[in-house]
Image (tube, rainbow, N blue to C red):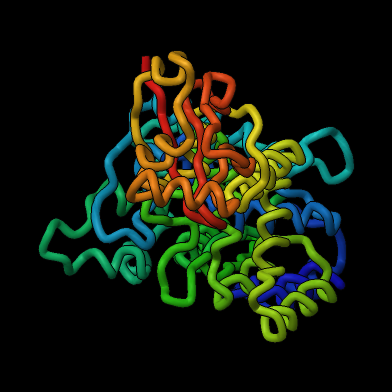
Length: 427
């Protein structure tokens, strides 16, 4: 299947500048295509997966991907889809963010020398060469203000009582439009891809190239990565789901996809994975016939965790997930245990209680509130329902000692199949 048909089947085409011509044009040879990434943080996030995977698809189809990190445009902030002015970042903060994004893109695109090698660029490298007057003369004169005022990103802000839009954000469109012209000059780039909220910026670049260079460029937008209820994918009660393991661990990342609703997972299969059509359709059928198996969620979680965090990260996430569902717990870090059992009650005890002859398991169950009384705790142990680090306790005489710590300071207790508690020992 050609790239345009592939994107169409997956539902990744929202708008195009010329659908019939684009399909033939893309099939006619290797093209250069670019996507811009906004460096407002030092890590990409779940919302970045859409454009990253789209660039990846183009490279695999024999086209040349250009990943642009907006070191210059990030200093201003794109007003598209924003209801208020952004906070401006310092040059140092932006540079740190740019470096973080670059390192993550290496997992998705092949930058090694070759016929279809990806290119990574920073628009600060060419924008810093402009003086203010030069930019107004060379670029600004080609922008009719009435066209700029008609863009949705501007119109939606102008009438607001709380400040409207500043001249700074109003000018953002000129900078992104010039990026397209520059990439055409330097790399022969003819196609820009972005989310549906980027339509105004993309068409502005196409218009600027026509006025400045008398060339025809093209644009494609994809749907935004949102849930059925309209909320953004990758946002949770605890915050954004990042691609950096320091910000979002492989386990939390994996669990995010495991817990996606059935109504949203079909879209994730198509938008974000490279699974073949036949497998995706089989998973669609599985959600109807055996929804309790959550096979779609497991496949998305596996594919994306492996891509973002490598095979080792996926294995770690799967081990951590199995731990929560009863797998025996061996040595781990306190940090990972607290992450796995984030919603589990915990109780602090002094470490000395383990050292002085050990802590009786019956007392431990009561301390952890897994039993209301010692009598109830004894019955739980005698009936085979008490576990220490997911290992069944055979005797009410069992003592917990420092050897039972699975982290630096944690013992995991369980009553029955799913009732967990942590004991945290402090010195």
